[in-house]
Length: 383
Image (tube, rainbow, N blue to C red; front, side, top):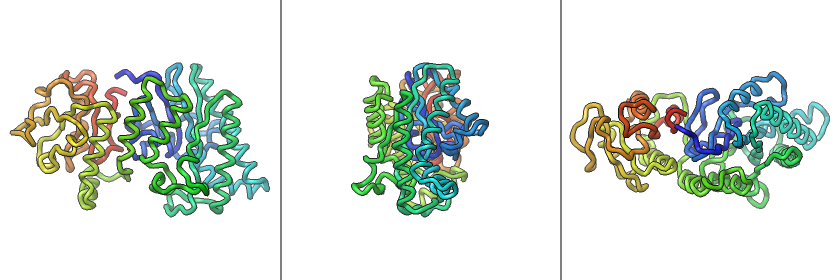
């Protein structure tokens, strides 16, 4: 399926996950996660540092070169690194070298910009380069998977110096720097918790702010800007997903136990809306679909045209259960509806929406999963 032109490619560490629009962590490159923000392609290279990209021969450089193969002339590449450096390494490096925190952060930002510019130039295309500022430091980070070094004041100082130098360095080479720090902090510069559900990463509530900043910076195609802002507004209501390596059934049971199945259904419905899919089909006409019903989709203004099942029988909430071959035209998304067999059904859905699918009415439709979105195929068929 042809990608929207031009595309904004966000390449970075875990903070690139914000730009999936789904409140979840994308898989590490070369695996590709899904993106619900139209015209945005988010790539998580891995837990690399801004410093990693400055080291010749480092795996981060090789991964970035590979990720850039998905770009086309005239598109925007926005780099999203530096928060890990400011949280864990700048303070320590300053102590070891006897330099100030500000000096270390400034030099790092300058080297990072030069390195990224060189890698983008090597692509040999007229790509536009941009940089996403490191998010503000948290006073307290309790998750052992996101350790900190130094005091809050030291980390905040490192972040401020890094972003200020990043802006100057980017401007000096004709690149753009976007920093929404002032919009997601209070008057004292502290994180506003509604934007930082885990005290480190921006959550879905920050999407409207982020998209507005991208439009203001001229990084988003004007013709697609309104649709992007509408998608950001809808997706900002999606609960942040905590994804793991467990099975779909395990995640389903955990969600049900917490009384959150309705929220997960709503997340799937919002994802359909964000992708411009107003008419959808449900894949799976079994007990799960009968139990959760169709009201969650209808509340978001979606029309459920059919419920698809390889062994159809009867109807659910007034919608007939039919063979996939009998799906009516106009369906733009297929929601996989099963708690125990979601992965198997997702593979079946991928077959049905493929470019050469025997079911013409479903070719190119999005595949939306309810319980394990992080393990799903790309939203864009064939991408």
